[in-house]
Length: 175
Ligand SMILES: [Zn+2]
Ligand SMILES: [Zn+2]
Image (cartoon, rainbow, N blue to C red; front, side, top):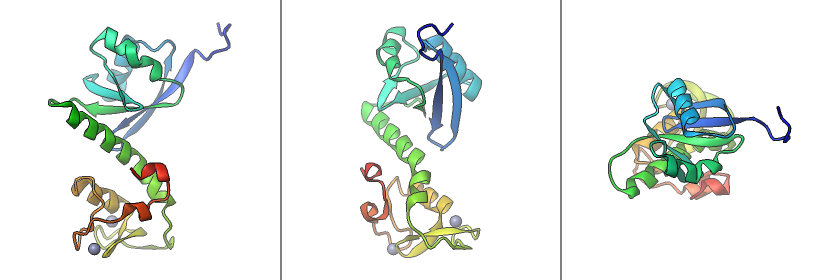
């Protein structure tokens, strides 16, 4: 069965722009039919755009699918994006946003805080708060503010664009 020594099943992770992550397994070779079935099972539809390592995996065309399917390896993260009508610029922004949103919670965990739980002035929930210019806020509010500010790190009080290069720790996160 495993004569070649290569695994016959690989783990793949799906990440939605909403932050939802799902992990599943798929047997090799990854085919369009198998991936479509998996998306239907996990998300109730296969009408999505998929990107892997910044490249698009096309589900509605066998030839295009085969071009990039090799990018799916064990533990690969696949971004599951809504289909969008419009130019390729929109697609790039969407992909980049998905990547940022996916990494933001983990990145926030690395940002030093005093570690004390205090009432977040925005949602009133006791949690560890991050210094964000004029206001300290919890992780959830930080992420929500970030989305509301069109994916900029902007102070919600004074409107200043924050220097997130000083805020974040991982250099790969700073784009
Ligand atoms: Zn909050
Ligand atoms: Zn401010």
